[in-house]
Length: 177
Length: 412
Ligand SMILES: Cc1cc2nc3c(=O)[nH]c(=O)nc-3n(C[C@H](O)[C@H](O)[C@H](O)COP(=O)(O)OP(=O)(O)OC[C@H]3O[C@@H](n4cnc5c(N)ncnc54)[C@H](O)[C@@H]3O)c2cc1C
Image (tube, rainbow over all chains, first blue to last red; front, side, top):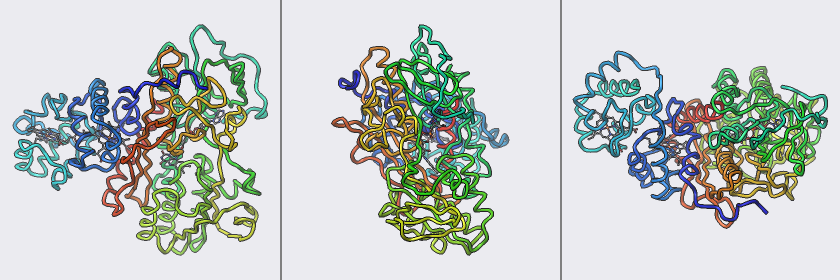
């Protein structure tokens, strides 16, 4: 016989979310260099990403297979948990000149949605400040190849920029703390 | 490593008298133990946590195959220490060998003295069923390494491969499942084949697998072998090695067929770490520890929890990721039990990445839940990477980050 095991309650947000940290870092603060941090992302950004992974709307290597193991209520719980974790500032090897160029481009192109230099995740917009550069680059490749879909207003801006400008913006966001 | 005068001996003196605080003792500072110790403290600072580990550092088995293949130059990126677990979380680390557990008195005996516990979490990993591998004693291990516990054995296998002449034969033996890390032997075959292809292309690798067929990610591994290592690697299923002849550098299949190699890597059959057996925690199979799927409390002894490779966790495989996930489930429910709160149903994950070439990796992933008292995979979820290897380059990049994150989790 086991003490107290018979009346176990359904998984708590912690029970669900801790399991992700082997890849995303304790409380969603990734140690890099390519697994994205989840800490302080908005709840809806996480829920939206998980739903799209699950349906296949958003391409993934592993997240699609994992997301299929959870319900919408689980996504809400995990979104809640990670949105409450402290922002994870990172120190990365970014190209200073590129980051500077990105700084000049972001206001006119991205700041309407990726607000506060990407530190604030509004609605379903992911936090990009301090996000790992290798991750951002891999996602940018998915956007460029058309495999990952962007919001229409983001596409309008993105598609007008050169490949170099896009990369500069990623260096800018990765360097923000 | 500290080594007591004799493994059965321990000191009787209570080295860490228990104050008024409740205490969890954790045995083992590996993939399961370090996480359990940290998460108990993260969840309840009023519980004292003492983690007992025989070594002052830990070397990761995950990615040790990449070192053997030459993709990683030394074991530093695979090595962690515990000072930040102490500084950040107040985990007390005791470097000692645990020699006995007394479930009635609720004490553990170590080479440095005894300690009392309120709850004990054991994550001692594996030891070998040497009685099923005739002739494979300590001296034989120095000649034919297992490299199934990372450290000097891993370095020895690499050195032997480096010293081997071009045109030599490498032999690997794989035990019947369950063993630590189902895809591990096949990843090792990839990494040894890669090294041979690059540096000793006239050489061969023969795998003698006791299992009838590749026991994890079979179709993916076979495609990898066909596309990359067809002239180097030969897989032979249903070949159970039962005996070694160390002087002859050969292995013997079911007492009959002898296969000789210039380098021989013997992966023996396994069971729960010796201390789990000594503590009376293994079940009817005499090898692995049955546990409650919600709390990981032992089915044999109250107030003792077993996680990681040593336990029987239903559908969860014996992997580092599973041990990490089990440790968190166990820590949450141990803290709940100690505070008289209801326990929570488990929700767990396993993902194992395996390298195939220098820049390609494949993975298996699953989400686990508890159903009718058993840990099962959530239906219609998880699975393996696409068979066309279309994701393999991205997965190789993410795999490196997985290692960094999971080792950082264990050490900070
Ligand atoms: C070649 C190889 C590749 C692998 N690759 C992967 C991979 O890519 N991904 C993955 O998820 N898993 C992988 N694994 C599996 C993984 O290493 C194990 O599943 C994992 O280490 C299990 O964790 P554990 O806590 O049970 O044991 P361990 O991590 O082995 O920790 C046990 C610890 O307990 C200590 N200990 C034992 N007995 C005592 C005692 N009596 N007193 C004091 N201390 C004691 C040991 O020194 C050790 O530090 C691989 C394994 C191998 C061999």
